[in-house]
Image (cartoon, rainbow, N blue to C red; front, side, top):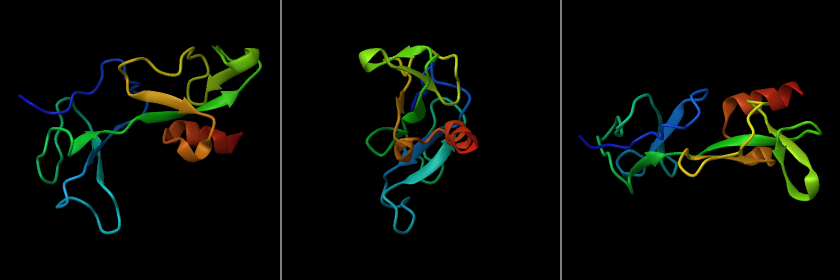
Amino acid sequence: MSGIVIPEDRSTKEPVIGYCYNPACKPHNHDRFEFIADHDLFACPNCGANQPPYVGQLVLIHHLKPSPTGPISGTSGLRYMIGCDTKRAYMATITNLETASSDLSAVNCETCLKRSKES
């Protein structure tokens, strides 16, 4: 069976967003069709494509917030925390397709974005 594999160490707090670049799937005025991938070995629900370069999953970008007591050590000894998981002591692993940014315009983690508006 073929399809896109969701990394085992990916956060389960947010849905995995898949994409398809098949020209037949692109919505008007968009570069790609996006959808929730709710299982491993997923394919595009429109056209059935299940391999790169047409189909893949978006990198989950968390909010990296400055915090004097945060578990993540940064440049010059500054401390940070992940907006949706204040105890998480890493930004990403080699395989989980996650990262973090202090630039909120780059963040796509819905929980991080919601919490940044609450603070």
